[in-house]
Amino acid sequence: MHPSLLRRSLAAGALATLAALTAVGLNARSPSATGEVALSTLPPEARDTYRLIDAGGPFPYRRDGIEFQNREKRLPSRARGCYREYTVPTPDSRDRGARRIVADCEGPRYYSSDHYRSFRRIRP
Image (cartoon, rainbow, N blue to C red; front, side):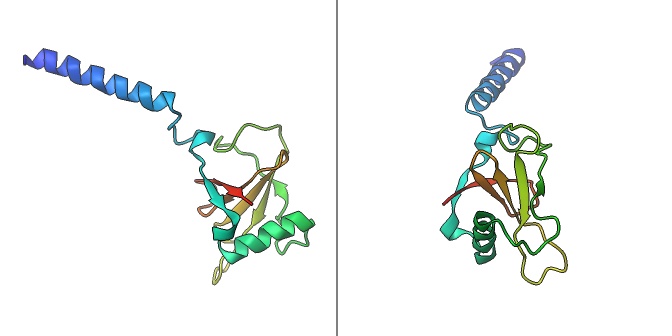
């Protein structure tokens, strides 16, 4: 095959692949990339935090219950103030650690083990 035809063929293939990935929502910032996790499989500290949210507290950290702004748009779009964040204690951590549960005012909750870089919807 002539080099210019090969380049065109490869470019066309790359564009087709990109279009397919976009069509199925595999954008890393897309809420569809969130995934799910069963509550029963989360660390015990996350299950305890989940129960505290259900009970309305008391929460061990001053910042528990503050607004989570979803600036990176990794969760579905909601009205300002709809998301609230809660600390999932990390054993042997000197600070709040990286683990969080974010509660959506519409019901779902999301677990992040990496300080909001990724989320998984919690299945109760």
